[in-house]
Structure formats: C-alpha cells, structure tokens
Image (cartoon, rainbow over all chains, first blue to last red; front, side, top):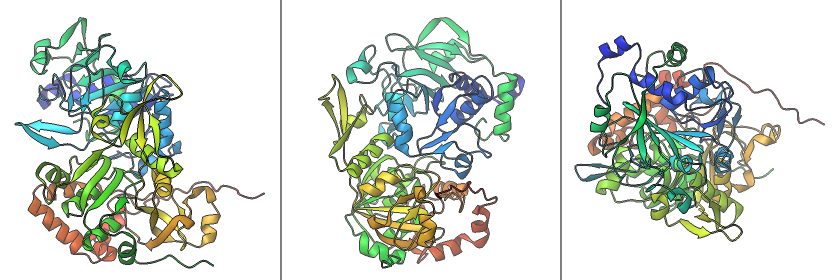
Amino acid sequence: MTARSEAEDADRGYTFSELMVAAAAREIGDGELVFVGMRLPMLAFLVARRTHAPRAVGLFENGVVRETPSVELLYTMGDPPNLLGATQCGQMLDVMSLLQQGRVNVGFLGAAEVDRFGNLNTTWGFRDKEMLRLPGSGGACDIACLARRTVVLLAHNRGRLAEHVGYITSPGYGTGSGWRRAQGLPINSGPSAVITTLGVIRFGEDGEAFLASVHPGVSVEEVLANTGWALRVDDDLVETPAPRDQELAVMRELDPNHFWTH
Amino acid sequence: MAESKLMTMRDAIARHVPSGSTVLLGAQLEQMIPFAAGHELVRQGRRDLTLVGPISDILFDQMIGAGCVSRVMAAWVGNVSAGVGYCFRRAVEHGVPRKIDVVDYSNFTMALALHAAALGVPFLPTYATLGSDLLKKNGNLREFFSPVSEEKLVAVRALRPDVAILHVQRADAQGNAHIWGSLGVVVDGARAARKIVIVAEEIVEPSVISSDPNRTLVPGFLVEAVVHEPGGAHPSPVQGYYGRDHTFFAQYHEQTRRVEDFEDWLARWVAGASDRGEYLKQLGAERVQTLGVKEHSYSAPADFGY
C-alpha cells in the first residue's frame, strides 16, 4: 500500500480506502445482482444500496441473499448478524446457479496478484524466488468465470500488478482478445475494473488493461512506476471522482471506527 | 421407538472415523464448523486423513499442524478473518510436520462434486474453472465436449466422503437434524457421504423435529451417530446459540506463526483439554457468556395444520 499520511487524509477529507469504496459502489447499477464478498466490497454494496442503487441485491457464497445492511460490522459472511434479517438463507448451489445462468451482474474480488489481462492469483505467492502458499480460490474462480462483470480491489505496487501472474486462480482475459471465448467461458463476462490505491484500470476490446483514472493527488508517473508492465494510459484519462458527502456519511455510519476504511 | 444413536464424541470418533478416512468438515462454511470433533480426531492420533470442505477456517489448519492430514481437497484454506493459515503454509512449503497433497477446487466445483455424489452420478458439468490453473492441476476437473451442445465444459468428478461430520442446532436421538442459518453445502454433503456423524447443540424430542419438517435438512436414517456437544463449534458461530469469537481467530493467527508456538497452542487447547467440557472451562464462563445470544429473534411459526 502506498503510504499516505494522516495529515494528507485530513486535508482531503477522506481516506484512500474510502475513495476505493466509493469507486467500487459506482460499479453497481440499480436492480443488479451482486456477488458481494467481504471488507471494502461489502461497504461498497451498502453505499450503492443507500445512494444510487436502492434495488441492488447482494448474494453471498454461503447461500445468503441480503438486501439490507447487517446491524453490526461483519468479519465473515457467516457472522450471525449477516443472517439475521436476510431475505434468504439458501444453499451455495442456489446462488451459484444464478451465477452460472449469467444472472449475476457484478462480482467483487480481491487478489494477491493481477496481470495486464486481468488474470488473478490467490493461490501461490512469490518472495525472493520462494513459493508461498496462499489460501486459494474460495469462490473467486467461479465469479471470475461466470459473473457478467468482475471488479477487483487491491493495493497498487509492482509486486501485485505483475506482467504475468504466477498462477491463474481466476481467469481474466487470459492472453488477450478472444481468449475467454476459446476457453469456453460465457460471452459477456470478464473483468470490468481494477480499483487500486492509486487509480482505476479498465480493459480494452483486446483484453489488455489501460489506466482509466488516477486518484486525486496521484500522478500518472507514480502509477506507471508502481505497475509491473508498461501500462497503457487512456487518451481520455480522468481523475477518480472524490467520494460524495452522502457516500462518506453511509460508510462512516456503517464503519464508524474505520475498521475497513483506515 | 428406534434405538438411540446418542454417544460421546470420543466413541463417535473412535467407531466411525479411522485413520485414512476422507472426512467432510465445515460444510456450512464459516458457521457451525465441528471444531470439537476435529480436536477429538487430533487427540485420538488419526493419521493420513483426507480433509474435504469448501473453506474450513482454522480447523483444517489445526489438523494439518497436528500431523493428522495427508491430503486436503478444498477451495480455500486459511483463517477467514485474519488471513493465511501458518500450519497449512508450513506443510505445503516445507513439509512440516509432514508433506500434504492439496487438490484445489473452487467453491462451486466443490459443491458440484458433492452434489454429483449426492445424485449418484459420476460427474456434473459446469463452465466454472474454464481457463484457470485449477482446471489444469486438479485431476478431478476434466474438460470435455458437450454431447448436446457445441461447447466445452468441465466435468466435476463426484466426491464421496467416507464420513461427514455436521454440526447442527438440534437433533433427536435418531439423528433427524434441524439446521438453519448458513447452509453452504450441508444438504449435498449429507447425501454424498457414506456415513454421517451429527454433533448437536441440543437433543430434542422427535416431535420437535417433525413439527417443522422443512427445517429437517438431514434425515436420521442416514446418520450413524449423534453427539450432544454444546459449544462444539466454538470459535465458529451457531445461529441462535452463540456468536463468532473473532478474538480467538485473531489470537490463533498470532499464536501459530512459529511451529513451536503452534505446538504450545495445541498442547493447551487440544491435548490439554480431555473433552469439550474441559475446553469450555479453559475458555472461561465469562467469555462463553459474552458470546451467547444477546437478543433472541424467533422466526414466525409456520402452520402445518390442515
């Protein structure tokens, strides 16, 4: 994570995690089915519900369907507050069936590594040429294969934005244009955005990543210096919009001690 | 009335889960993980177990660290709220305390593997894992060309555990079990397994079970043993009984970074407690009470009358 001082956060009026949550929330359309996940994406889903997407529905891999925020901060999707007041507590196959039918509009994922074609690795890490075993896919591979859009959130540094991932846990656009189709993956699926601590990356028709926006106070040079390949920059590069007051108010109501958005 | 299947955890594990077994644990994901059963497997010195489960939170990590495991078939192994599992990493990276094989699934393909076994068919098709390295490395996921449509699919081989150990809210003495809250793969897991051991927070009369048959997710005729073990899922939560002990997961993370620290942890919480009652005593009445239900929230009754 690129270090930002608390003084800078105070000047700006929000933290970079809050900016990422707001950017993630804007990836959710009203009425959409969302594979939520935990931590920042969970907050993003709740922000979207309370602002521009009041009819979005949240799905969890344990089978839970939820439309309202839980009464307490969650550490896992199986925490009792996530089940109290849920719309449905079904089985894993109930939510995975919607995913495989192509009815899930957007799924959120984290990753240890993402590469220039949006492939994700959460299985094997590498440090000083040593292999580090990471926890694995969970539902990430399923979401990356089958959701109409996937949005990835991660810290931006050269180690994590690598030219090639060491292991494809969750496929993005593979080696580029046409690859997903050749693998047999559904049409209209694949990575839509990678929201990092420095900017937002999107993908061209050829499946390759490009820098679509930089966060306020971040230079393009800083992004490129922290990316493990020659990242293309959009001709229409913009600044990531700052979180709106209403978005920040929801985040701070749900996460008053900045447990997730420090 | 049929003979009671009630027995102690010690007897259930001794009779039904020998070394070399393939064991499904953690079918309800982060909820209702049968930690008490896992600890008894460690105490009875089981070896060469194959652990099966979508995610396991820290139970798989503990059993791997204790040397009970030769193979893991799972989608995710670690500590859900704290990050990696150090015992899992030591075993995979350095063969400590022994080498293990890891067969990587995704959650969906794990669910389909159990569903196929539950249906009694050799495989089920899916698009999930196409293009991934899971498909390349896991021999139980095989690409094939659809016989009814012009496309590639993945055949997920049926996975039949020798025994499923399922923690539930309540069961009768025959093993008819009510489960609510996080279900995950429990319904398929129960039908896929050759044997089921039920671990229940409460033992109730059969009339309680039959008053709400939609909630009977495991029928007793499939069950070999019923263990009454209140608190048996701690530190994982049981809806309506106790919450998740987040601090315990964080402490486990801190206390198992080095192998010698894990040995101390195991000596205290597993070897140092002869059964679940002892474990809960060590945990302390205050902590147990803190995790208890603060405010009950009962569902509206369903009318089965006619």
